Image (cartoon, rainbow, N blue to C red; front, top):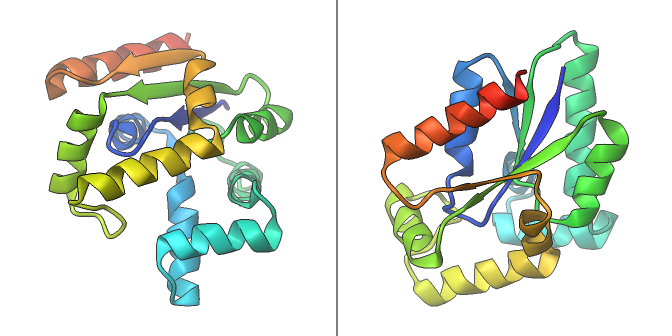
Length: 179
């Protein structure tokens, strides 16, 4: 059993890593889903909930809740690859490394214009079609330390070309970590 963290700014292509890994037997835990689930319970927007959870329980509550979820998955007998989608700070990386042997980070990179076009087309609840709002979201995530996570990653995959090429890069990465 191995736990791998996936990081990258919104629209970079993190979800496809998870999708392909899932098709190959991995369990996926999306940190953003934990926030979205809590937002639904609270009747708040995801941004409000993300901010409120951090104010109420500390800056790294989402990572802590994610680790709890992964521990339960392991305790229930799952013993294959687990992908954590959405790591955003170096401290979160440290928490995962403290809890899981051989934890590593893969980051997905794409330039802002490409990511903005992807976000406009995916139409997720917390997405925007306003470029200024998109940039503010990037700045917020960079403020949480995602740039440090990306720069210190064990592997960086560039996702700026066609889908087929990106899928091949993901498959190659998954094969490499399976050895």
